[in-house]
Length: 556
Image (cartoon, rainbow, N blue to C red):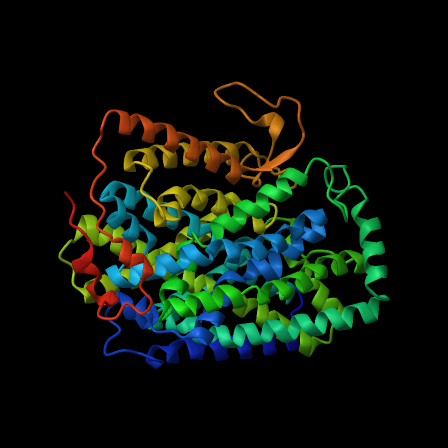
């Protein structure tokens, strides 16, 4: 272990324990008659108002990815890291109308997961299963990102051991998440989100005022950062630039658009939406949530501040390499008093726990409703469903730990981007299906398979030059390496593109072609168990989520 930063550690621990206690007490907050029902445990009773939903979705979407991973990318690569800003700006307008429709049909039909909706819309248990498994797979690296963020903070405070001790912070985070999520369900992160967001706003506002004063203004910061980024990095090339280069402009655009399209396809994002008590609450939040983008823009600038100050990432004693994810914690540790640094570290740590809890709940709902109840125990009672979901919420965290141990990306943001490549393949079956059933159910399966297989092949081919790993080193592929059955249409090009965008394009192309073939040969399309009016309900009076098990169609 390194020398411990005791003041920071004490403040961090006190606040961390405080919100953990809140997590346990949350079981009684706005609770219904019983917690032994997925509507209560997994969706908070479907009765959160505008303020609670705003903090819940904000706490869910603005995660350790926001506070650790994106500024670390800016520190290491420069302007490319700013893709997160336009991505969040365009995400909410894109998602506004589809999410209102998803909330409406889910409330009327009692759907708990996006796979429930697909099951009812296309009368296809197989397609619903694939959507559920995709959601589970995409959620695990996202949970892993949260645990990496927490680990970076603990490492900066001196908890930086080698061997087993190197991953001990992950085990600590797992135990804390597991226990209070099991006990309180969605109410725990909803309540803690109030504290998390308040701390983050305080820390960010003070930091963007204090640091320029200390460093001679933003002009001086940009000048110093530009000079530092132009210096050779680990591979011998310039680390990055304040402006995008000709080879990463396409990557920037496709990364921003692809991430925006993926954002509300994640099961955890939809969980926060489905917990709202009305469509009006959803609309208000889609209008108000961009306020978080202002905070994100300010936070991104801290990456340049870290470059300007010459901050160096902590060495990871477990791997023997610098941990780029520690750069913002190191910046706070070097530039601020210990008491404020402890406050900032607590904000980052809590900012990791809140979304990780929601993600594990969303993954548990998928397993319970679309695998356990559909295939293993069709007569499961609501209480049995809830117990299964609680156990699943524990298991999914082990999968997240596996991503960290075995994938080991250069930057923790790659965990989120790999998840984005995966979840984007559900867009035709989930988002587009909210408006039309034109795609045939077998075509959607074919398109999904194409996007997933090609997406994983492309991800597998991307190396990590810093860690030395040959595979799964990121999500940016050079067009010159893009192969279509051995044909390289852009041979020699060094322009980069987001893998998820390419995989989605292939998905949609195959789904379109197979739909035309299925329609030509009159392959049965299955029954649509939803009705047009289901997508336009406001309060869905007379229908509650408790009817979910009865309203879903049986397998044929």
